[in-house]
Length: 91
Image (cartoon, rainbow, N blue to C red):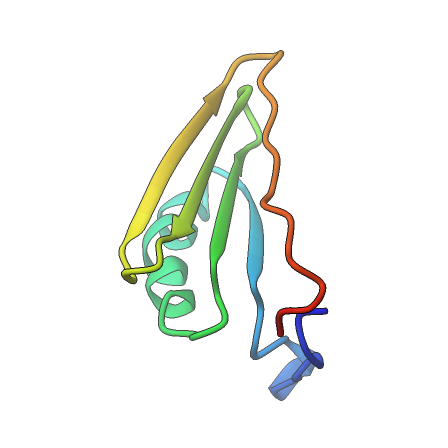
């Protein structure tokens, strides 16, 4: 359980743990920079997944316990991305 879903204006979640963005050429920079800066201010936010539309490429950004972000790239047709499992007893 991640806790109750909290909704803000426009029915958007205000306490996400993971956000997944499918990038397009016209919004890539905004998603990669501005949205990430906004999302990273949310205390519950732990993972940001950026998926390229035009290639076999995914970037995973994961918040470390010290608050810093670690980035890992997944490239190629056979690449696998696994999200961390959550302990059901942790909020």
